[in-house]
Every structure is written in structure tokens, then in C-alpha cells.
Image (cartoon, rainbow, N blue to C red):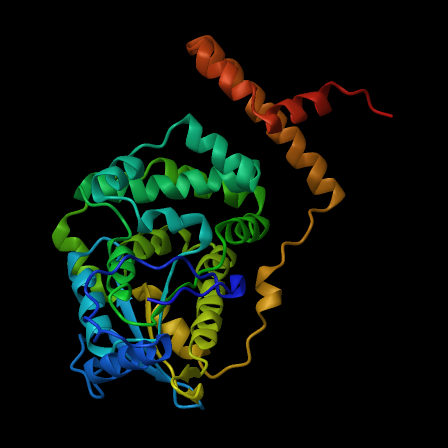
Length: 360
């Protein structure tokens, strides 16, 4: 599988492949490339019989995008992804991941299951360092939703993405793209869209999530991904939050899929030909991608994070200082080691320093 080094396309390295056909001896590089291209062309089905979860989209240049709508905790979705990639032998596979979540592609199920269930102080520190206090805490709370589903099902998330990565590695010249908006941008825009009261209400709902989930529930949710359905039920009363977490990412995913569907160069003369793309996204994003497919999209608008107002900055820092001071003191009394670790966070030290500074 060919590796794309264009950072704009958020590509990742290729999966190892030991299933490529043997080559006749004595071929030059250009001849070997042409043979592999012909092998893929012969394998590609022009009218494939695909699962009901696959939506077919086209571009004006004739490129085809097979959009696989998945449930993030579903064995059936993994099979749908494998079936689609094997049938259409794509030029590009695009998945609903960003560079901040790419590690899940190469981790084994046992490790992922443990990681998904374990939300510890180190993860809190990392989230806050990466996204800031408020966005970091929101990320941890959303991870708690995923961890709750993981614990209920005993199944690690992202199986369909790992399946896509593995199957893409078996297709000659197939590139693998990360198609989702970076998590820090999504969380920062989501936090900025909420009032302080809305943030408190959302945090409360996420903290006390405890409804039981069965594997049968997951498969029933093939028409609406379980994780996204859980989140939609919780954020339904916050239209601004739904816009940033779902609708804006629909736009971003549409953009990356259209970029991936640009014409490719076919050997031996580098002739431009329409591309075949497989997109792997949560079922909840499929309707939005369909709606946006033929529209003019403003990507810069959904990638910007507005700076906070001066008054808002003062209020937030006072609240952060009070919250972290209280939490740090509580942890210190309960466990000196945990308390020291919490109070050692650069963000906490900076906030405490600001509180100690006399006003000018």
C-alpha cells in the first residue's frame, strides 16, 4: 500500500502486507508497478454487492466514494468495512479519526480494552495539557461515556477503523487518510459555544451516566451509532454543542472525502483517472455528509477558535483557581501523592500564581 506524505491529507503509514501476488523475475520497477495496477484493476468489482450500510457518492470527475456507516462498537460493522474494501479495491481509505487518536490503529484489542476502561490521573493531566482546563475536563467526561459503553460490552472502540487499516494494507497503491477534525479544535469550539450553566449541566449528566447496554442494543443501533446516540440524547438540549460536535464534523469529513476523491495517476503514463474511495464513519455522520456533498464548504470557519473576552477570561480563571484549589486540597488530604501530582500541573501552578499576584 502506498504511503501519502502530504500532511494536509492527514495520512498515516501503511500497514504491513504479506498478501501481494508474486512477481515474475526480472521486472523493472515501472513494470512491477504496472503489474500491480493491473492486479488491482482485475480484483475491483465494477458493480459490487455491498451491505445496506454503504452509501455511494460521486464527483463531477467521475470518482466514486463508498461511504460505510458504522456503529463504533459493532462486530457487524467490521465485516461491512472488510467486505467493501475487498470488493472495490480503493485508491484511498478515509476513516473518522484524527492524528490525536491514530494510536488505536496499531494497538491490540486487549490493550485497547484496558486503556478505554482506565481513566486515571495521567490521562486527566494529558487532556488538560493538550486542550486546556475546561476543554480537557470535557474530553475526560466524554471519554467516560466511551468507557461506560466499553465496560458494559467488554468490547474496545474503533474496531472498524482497525479493520479498515488492515484491509487497506492488502490493496496495492491504497492510501490511508485520517479524515476527522482534530479533537482539540472540536472541544475548544464546543466549550466556547456553551454558557457556564450549560457546561455544569452537561458535566453533571456525563458524570452520572450508568444505563446498562447490551450487545443486542449495539446491533439495533446500526441505523444510528450507539456512542453518537448516547451523546445525542445528552446534548440534544444544547443545539450549539450538537452543531460543533456533529454538524461541523460532518462538514469536515465531507471536505476530506472530496479531497481524497481527486483523480489519481495511472501507470504507465501517469494518466489522470477517477478515484475510488472508501470512507468509514459513524452512521450518525452519513446524512450530514450526503447533505453537504454538493455544497460549497467553508473549512476555515469551523477550524477557528475565537479568543475569550477579557471579562470571561477573568471569570474563568477565578472559577478554575477555586475549583482546582479545592480539588487539589481534597486530593492532598486523601492521598498526599495524588495531591502533589495534581498540584504539580503547570496549569494549576499558573492559576495559583495568578491568584497570589496583587492587583495593579
